[in-house]
Structure formats: C-alpha cells, structure tokens
Length: 439
Figure (cartoon, rainbow, N blue to C red):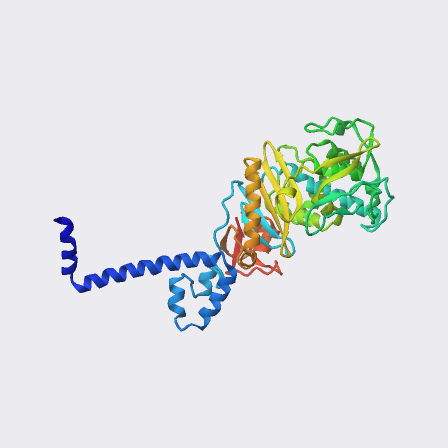
C-alpha cells in the first residue's frame, strides 16, 4: 500500500512545489554542465579560443560568464591566476621539496616551489664546474673560435655531435671521424693526475697518479659519470688547487645572479656548507647552455673518449636523454644528503624549457616529477608566461627600503626580486608602492 500511495501523494502536491523541484533539478544540471565545460576548456586551448570569440558576440555574455566562473574584473583574474582565454589547471603534485621551471629564451620563471630553499646540490655542482672550465678554456684561447689540433685534443667537445642539437640528443663522434670545427685549444692540454685526484672518494675512474688525459676528455668523463676524481684533476689543473677552483666557482655563481649558493668542492660531494637552490641552479645552467660546447656535452648520450691509448665508449648516466621526447640534457645527480636531483632541458614546438628538481626521494619519483613538470609547462606555456605559478607575498615598500635590504630581510636573491617585479630601475623603490617578495 505504501508503494501505491506515493503517486497519489505526488499528484496531490501543489503545482508550485513540483515547479520548484523541477527548477532545482534544472539548476543542478546546468551547474554540473558548466563545471564540466569549464574543466574541458581548461585543457583545450583551441576550443577555449573559439568559445571566447562566440562569447564576445553573445547578448548573454554576463550570464554565461557567471555560470562558467569567469570573473569579469581584471584584478580578480590576476589574483586567482585566471585567464580570459583559458583557465590554468593546477600544477602536478611533486614529491621533490624544491623545483623550478624556466623559459630558456626569456629567462622567465614559469613555476617555482621552494625555489630559494638551500639544499645540497649533489652532482649538479658539475654544471658549475663545467662552466668554470669552459670560461678558463675560452679565456686562454681567445674565445671559442680558436682552432685546436685534430685528434690530439678532447675527443668530444671539439667535434660535431651526431644529432646533438636543438632538436634532440645524439652521440658524439670519435676524434678524427668527422668534420673538425674550431674549439678552445686549452681543452687539448694534457692534465697530469695528482695524488688528490687519484685518491678521491666515491665512484672512481681508477685514475693513477702521474698519468695524463686531455682536459676535454676529463671534462666529459666528469660530466657523464659520477665520482670526484676527474673533477678534482680538472680543478687542480685549471686553478692550481681545489680551493682556488672553488673560489672561481663561487665568483661565477655571484656573477650570474646565483647569490644563495656556496660551493665547497668541484664534484658535489656532500659537505657542510655546500649548498645551492633550484633557482640558482636554473640560472647557472642557463648561463652554461649559452656555451655551444657545453650544450653538445650536455645533450650527448654517449661518447668515444681516449683511455690509455685506445678509444673507450662512455655512456651518459642521465637516462632523461632516452626517456623524455625532445630531451636536450642537462644533468642528473644523487647524494645521500641531497637526494635525487636533476636539471633537465627539453624542446617542443619551438619552446625550450628548463626544469630543476631537487631532493626527490627516489630515482623513479625524480623522473615522474621532472616529466610531469615539463609536460605541464609545454601544455600551458602561454598561460604560464602571462601568470606564472610562483610562491610569493605582497609587501608595501617603506621609506628607506632598498633591494639589498629586502634581499637580506627575506633571504632571497636580488635577482629574484627584480625578476618577480620586472624592475628595470632597481634604485627607484617608492614608499607606499607594492612589491612581490619571493617565498
């Protein structure tokens, strides 16, 4: 009887109640449809652009914008990170505690997560070591255009890379097997292995005290493989001592705006006070990529290097070069204190992005972090250029404030303050104006 009485009760319900119920259901349906449409448009830029064009001509624009949650005030869009053409979806969830994503061409930060937190950089230190070695090589040879002897110098850095260019990684040819473009002749210098290099801890090339390798081959060994011996040998050859070389590394870091880094050794071995940040390492990697020989080295999967009067094929330990479409290098690293880290360069559709991930708990999670971050950057590059996802807070300028004092107070580099606020004249800080402070 109860089941039979329900239609009777519905029939006796007032017409207004039935209408209200129908309107409520219709509202819920439209609300759900709008939410789904909003989510779909966020991942479809082409349809989003067409939808915006139709919306601009519609007499119901205000109603549609309200249902699609498109705030009309430009200020609302800036605060919520929204874009009239496309709504930016949330970034990928990363396991690494610190990460940045950088547009290589403009130097603009697109994403930052604890970008200024000091952490052990591990083997990413070798990017800075290579930068200093190339600066030394170019300074002593009159620049990158000085020809070097064929066959008796670095078997990798002065030679054309098969496929190692802006489109993807490749292999570096053996000495004498291909065209011989110009190269810094200092990289052909013989480096005598000293006692400190031969006895360096960790993974070893099994270098023996007194034997000789070219500076270029040692640089490739250092970059392709873990360990400290090749880095120590280069440091002693370039600067006379490891301490002198480390001083050059720190001067180079400051010169490139990496003001929160402090390097204690050339290999990245864990040591108290040996620290850098994701932001600093992105700046230093971008500077190194301006050197053609470094770009060839960083993008090579393998190389034939001289080893005791014969060629030895050495494979780059950076598996990112094989695994990510459009990968161009740069370096992967691990240390007990620093965890699993990577600086990764990739190109897609004419865009080059550099991701730096520090401190992932495992090698697999490092790979997932950097791949998802690069995918997100390429998929939403235009939106991130307009509204980058940066950890920051507003600050009202007080009388007497300077960039230097603010950098010290908030423990961030001056270069980041300039970048976050597009400051062309950093001396003109007006009391009462607002700045973004990186966090």
